Image (cartoon, rainbow, N blue to C red):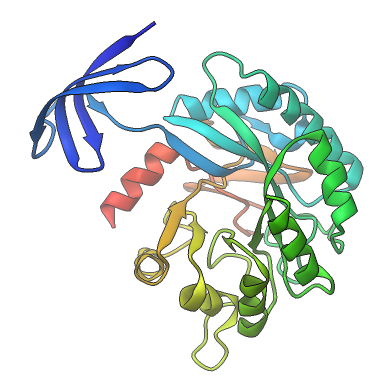
Length: 311
């Protein structure tokens, strides 16, 4: 059944004031170009796609069960129409439990929720020296383990540290299998980052965070991204990355895209929550471990857009 909605529609060529007709896809846009919406006028934007979501609405992906329903509903209410449910570095048993819950929602999307496109497996194949807010459950990755997990729920993105022995070969095999390997939570050098890109790594996970920083004599993993990457995530909550660093990334990398890295505290009042097995506290506009380390974000994609416009 064809439906319609009227207002000021944001298109790749600017704003159009008119009526959008659609069923499962956009059928037609009828109207005229305008410079900008009028005050109080309905603004119609494309739905957001968030490729890095740990939680929201008080729930965490690693809980399994019905947690992903609550998370997907919270993010849909902020304009996210599709997302990747993102796991934590953890034991094999806990990761499998989370994937079982994710699989159910991939197969049958509940009404009023974001579509779960699959899994972003963030760890456990990361560096113990760049955990960020991840638990200390790291281990080298193997293709057999990845494929075992992939059979439980479709893995679309996998974050790993390229400097771990055997991971260059894993990157190549993942890329050939259609799983997107991204570099992150890494203590690797500039040279190791470039080598991983040459092996088939597709981009960088939350650029600047939990990776070797840029220095003019040791460019690090950030330098490899700025000099060679085609794709990189950025968390634009204005806590994880300074606006100037976001601008630098956008000038250097052709396809910088924002993610929320959101956690259970997204959409919730200040208080205590969990990120995987780690207790975290939401306060002062962010969410942190007890030692003050940023532990993901409380960002939603509509606020991410507002932040990007403001810088």
